[in-house]
Length: 444
Figure 1 (tube, rainbow, N blue to C red):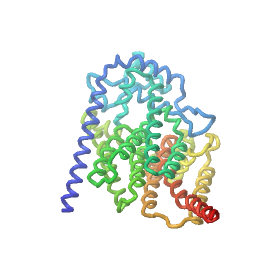
Figure 2: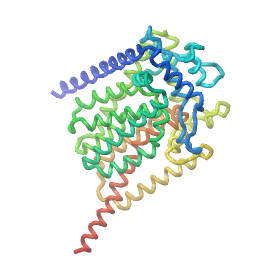
Figure 3: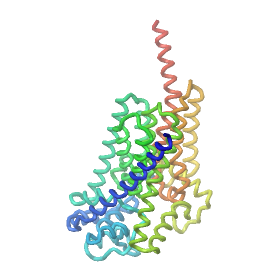
Figure 4: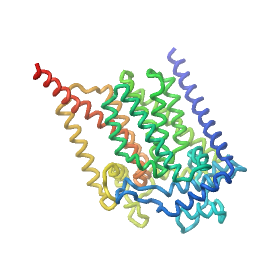
């Protein structure tokens, strides 16, 4: 009987992955058929907007966590404009855009929009699924307004998530969740699609989890997370992709504290998420191989795997010395930790990031050690596993995490939430309850 159940879950998960891939590709091709003339006006406005911005512009003082990524958004808008509506599938697979040698990133976009050049470079290793929303929205809005729409959607949906959790009695968790949300600088979601796409996806998945029935079996969650993995690779630029698994899973564990075998629960659903994610990656590679040929496909795969353990340099400066493997792994962690604090670009030093983080960790765990009663390890051990996923990702994709830390650090939102929740439940809450009991005794 159990073997039949397992087979049923596996079959449903595989079919869900295939169906989700088909729907994603179909929608992308459909969106690619929008005539270029319909996005011409807003593309011109967007190109001129990017011409006034630095590729990576610090918006608040000199703080590293207030860096606006205009470079990636310019490339994305460039790709969207260069879509050939006569060959929509081929065009979205190749993801070509206009690039001007030895010129600023925005020049290629501006020139192609003006009709002064044509697409001459490809970005084929990603699906660029953001185009579903971006190309449609650009019929009416420029990139500046679209960024505002994405940011507003994230903030409002996160507020709704917090409201639902609070209404269901998870008040202390909501407080921890709000602090962690603030620490990843939500105002920056209004400034770049590169920051908001994966986070918006994770937010929608969280809300879907809260809307589903409370008691969910493997046949509900495993296909669901497999579909989420597919969608994550489809829309994400390898930024904070783990959040689409870690945030919803954290919500599931907090909501369903009675779930048995939580570690196995995390593992099974995590494997499904990974299967969906890599299923979409393999699909893209196969399409690229069929349409663009072996050389382009191999080049795209090589560029993608460069993010695993590729060469990095000190200060991310091309003429600086190469960092050794240990330094790369070390930097992949502390660069991301540094972005949680108000550290300026000039004072971004390793000791400051590590010492600040370790001090907070020691104080928090010290509070738990001194004041804890009975720790619910059945809940907090699985939550700790979820909290460690961002750091495992930083190490596995050390090149990417070392270089693009100002994007990837937001994956730590789940880690901060779990840490604060653990400390509060096992120290501050114990102290508050003890003080309440003392006041009751005194009053009698």
